[in-house]
Image (cartoon, rainbow, N blue to C red; front, top):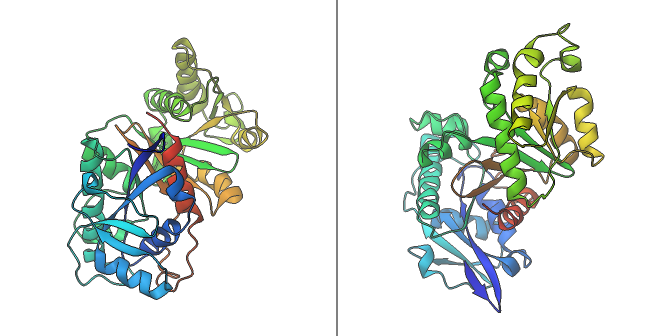
Length: 332
């Protein structure tokens, strides 16, 4: 961390994401926001030529300063400090490509190395393309799984923060038909424990954790499914025995309203869309993705590469701004 006039500021590594998408643009736009420099020291990891082209496209008055490592940082309010990965190649604009996938992964690997070595305090990742990293020969289904493997993390979960909602997912990137087979007591209990950890990261002193059911009406005592009675409820009861303030399973069609009204701090959701549809309904442009369980803080905008509007100067940086702000606020 950097101390400025008595204030301790976090050093935050920001990865470029897929160069063909909106990642470089929203990074440059976010770093022109004067508020960002007031409470953190951002260091971008990416390709210099990409960012030079983005800055020229948007005529953004942001000088680019290349540094070798975070320790060489000399912050300036009118400059973006960049660690150049040196992999500029024939990547495609507005489309996934193997080269774009390789560049995305190289940025993430460098950021993880810095975070593990305590050279940065947090990592913020710009959007990547799952298709592009697959085209490049990598097998990860997404950022979350990649970061877990790179850090040797076995217990992790995706948490989304947006507006008045916080949701954490038991299952992430898997076909919907696979979800019921993955709703096991140990998986639900692990996610409830990670939800409790997430509340600590957010400095919630008396967290209220609600666990959603999988089926309509949370199974209605077995009428609409038995996952609630056989797997979810036993996990909640075990969590309570461990001193975790959890409740549920609660009907999915009402639990999000309770959280929206301020009665619940975080919802343990059974699958991806169960948690993300309500969150994106109320905070589409401001949602932030947090990986809970890593040995460092990691946040990301809760949107994709948006190839259709990339390289047109139209991408809005609000989610990236929120991701940087949240990374600064979270603690491990």
